[in-house]
Image (tube, rainbow, N blue to C red; front, side, top):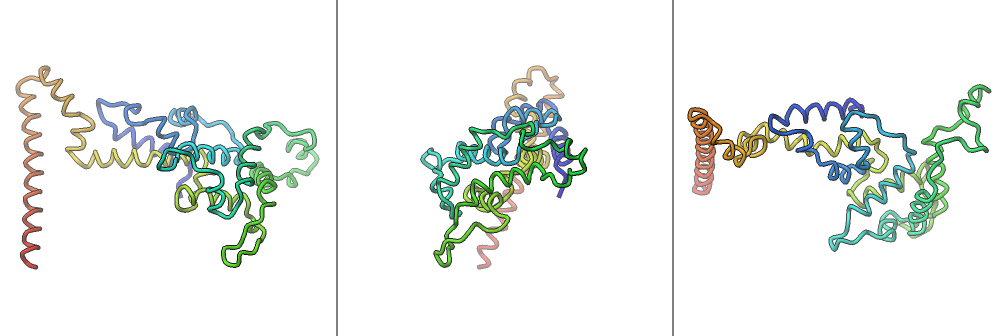
Length: 272
């Protein structure tokens, strides 16, 4: 698996090399669409595209924010949002457990400074106790566990109520919601912004790679027939003739391929 920062930088470099003359990165990268697909806020998308580091974010706050984002952007066919009832029921939880989790984290964001009851890691380190301090992710998982672990999940096999699986509230809630929206757990809710944006950029990259491999796609994309037509009066007669001959050659090659393809289909049909 590629590391997140090199992977994103590599993808952006590849996209830059494929854009070609006549277009800029802004012409092919839609910040709004990338934000919707990745779950990364628009301002953070812009920062990452410019090579900047995103601001720190508590992992549980990230998961909750993206749950809200999914409800707002992945709508039902009738254009309405999925309810907490149907989302929670899909993985055996209750509406209350999910809505309480979302609402509590949205109203009370995680503090960025140590609370008076918990000494800072630096202070404990000076006392030789730093190894006893849980990491930010562990603390976040504990907060989420307190919200969800009390909810008992009915067994699909027996109908009996059993505790949520071990290690589980954060992982099982995330897996359940990702399965509801994507068909399987995929880490979308908790992925770092760099990874999320890199994943969203893959469709752009693949589209540019298809253009690079297809002369007609390049003609439609990089140059554009309308743009060529608009520039035609500026071209010398010899230059215009070269462009015309090039287009004719491509079209003739395409027509020949279609004829060969249709001839092969006819032979196959007659053989049967």
